[in-house]
Length: 514
Ligand SMILES: CC(=O)SCCNC(=O)CCNC(=O)[C@H](O)C(C)(C)COP(=O)(O)OP(=O)(O)OC[C@H]1O[C@@H](n2cnc3c(N)ncnc32)[C@H](O)[C@@H]1OP(=O)(O)O
Ligand SMILES: CC(C)C(=O)C(=O)O
Image (cartoon, rainbow, N blue to C red; front, side, top):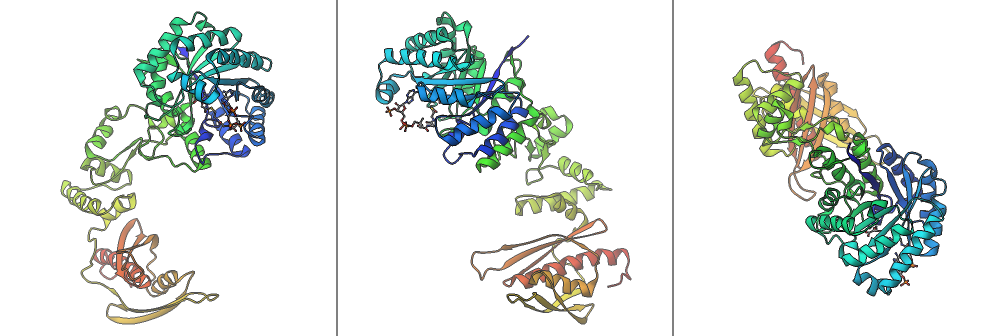
């Protein structure tokens, strides 16, 4: 039987210490409920002595969450411990986490206390916390830079005083994995009553080593990890919950522990924390980044299509994604191209058709960052990408007007098979009015799928490059138009797309009505 690894989430406490990540009570409750769904063992909901607002947040989380232990942080001072004790009172299971620094630099320069005074205060704090709950965690802050013998002395004393969890913080992210792992080994071996408490790791990411250090701790006997969603936290952040949980789950051959985390809730938790704090998740972030399960290069796509495990060590679905993703781009190969089109219901009759469409795809991918499904469909159904040989429709002139309080109007004159026709229409804007005027003359029955304008160069006198995508009866065409006047470039793009639609219809039905 594997040991249980306690997952202690501190998104709402250390995560909130990220500059700019302060959360309201309501936001903390929303995140806490998601953490409960995620089945983390402990939620550190805040620092109740920090403010009345944080006190009330911890209190509210303690009364709403039933299935995770709710923890409040407290310095080793009377007021902090009493506030924490009161804040967690309503919890089904409540914990007080008290701490005091043990490194020479913190004791001398910050606390201005002697080592003996620190030991005495630590013991006092744990005993005081036990007046409120049996579940007391103690942290020797800056343990990563503390003297080993002194650390052993403090920890032995606080376990005797009633601490049930001993958390070892690498407060400033200074340790490296083999060193942090060795620290746990030493502590567990040297402290005579170490078996009376669970040892925990709390790592910071100043050197990008928080997850690696936490895993080294687990390898050396830690049975609680303190972590945050998306690795949020003071300065460079804390151990990312999603990474450490998936590491021990994926590498069960190395880690002799299990968590009770429902990993399928990871992505939802990540998105919620990101939206509440406004901290975007980088696309290449492990587990929860947009590219974590996306394959763009042809060799990888080919491998995954043949056998998923060739390039995937986890299943996207296991952490909450719908599925992995094949991204079509300039590094993609024929196999992925053909498979994606088959998924979109498009087959090639001959190998040559496939090769020609693939060449057009590569050409487009060189010019465009992202290739969407509609681009792929257009590549197959619309193989004359720019010009149409015999244009049925041509723009002759365009007059558009817009005035505050009046409905925008456009009058378009077109040549249809050599005959000039005009129409006037109004719309929600001048481009909308222009498209309506054109449609009133053409009645194409096509659906507008995409309309976008981009500047060719900077400045208001720049050419506007317009793209219009039309769909009719499963056929998709892209039209392009360019002009310094974006209404004119839009009309040109729409008419270009109509000509492409008509071109193929004419080929299929030479008498197609206009
Ligand atoms: C490593 C960590 O992440 S620890 C948690 C950090 N989080 C926070 O600090 C967020 C919440 N903090 C706060 O709101 C405030 O700092 C408060 C309410 C806790 C304290 O505010 P203030 O009373 O104004 O003190 P201030 O923050 O300026 O200084 C901290 C004081 O606590 C002392 N102190 C720091 N840690 C501890 C500790 N673990 N036990 C006892 N005293 C401590 C400092 O020595 C300093 O004391 P001094 O004022 O006698 O010099
Ligand atoms: C309070 C402790 C655990 C802490 O946040 C740290 O040392 O980083």
